[in-house]
Image 1 (tube, rainbow, N blue to C red):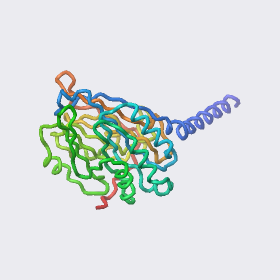
Image 2 (image 1 turned 120 degrees about the vertical axis):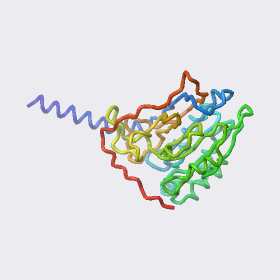
Image 3 (image 1 turned 90 degrees about the vertical axis):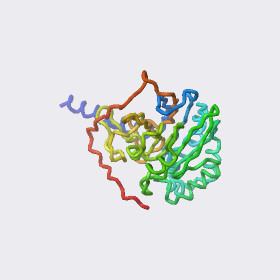
Length: 302
């Protein structure tokens, strides 16, 4: 009987400790994740080009206030990226509810520095209403892409960047937009939601996404009980290659459940290089999710 009670006590203490860690420690443990990618349609003169990714900050939620936003900006700048990409979900609703002055958010984001600038798209949580996030970004002198493209010229070489609106709010036709702008220059696609990836034509170089939060609650080997993607674990996080098309998904920074496990908030630093026969990856393996994913694809709003 004593052994049984001791076992129950150990299990309870372990469970409570794990919940404390998942609620108060891991969501605040901002890490820098690095990856070196070898890409098709990339110029070898641009090898070593660094892109910094920030996604799903969810400003105003439990663990992201103005002080933490300043730390995110400071940490990104310390990595000296050539280009900074913001992948959406600043979170208009919680910015409004938090009553954090929007001018202070703009002032913080305006401190992001990179030689080839800062470019942003909007996420599904940025449309309630969209004017809040758009005004914040515009006042921070950050370029917003909404089904539009822009160009940067590192080493006098041209890189095209195409950014899409959120696919849960708009019916998108990425094939048409990309094909109208497809060429033999490196082309990087920005889409908050990685579920767009199967529709991206192969003439592109790389697609960058966020949205999934890495599942927030992730259990190694077993998977995650909720991922906001109809493709389950396939586009949960990190580097994905399908038929020589390349995708990188950031696990983001904020949390909506209030918990993170084995999946800390992250700033991502990508180093881009030209693909060769020696480093070519055609497909990455797909992991099995032992949990039932309870996500249902929402109806498109517009």
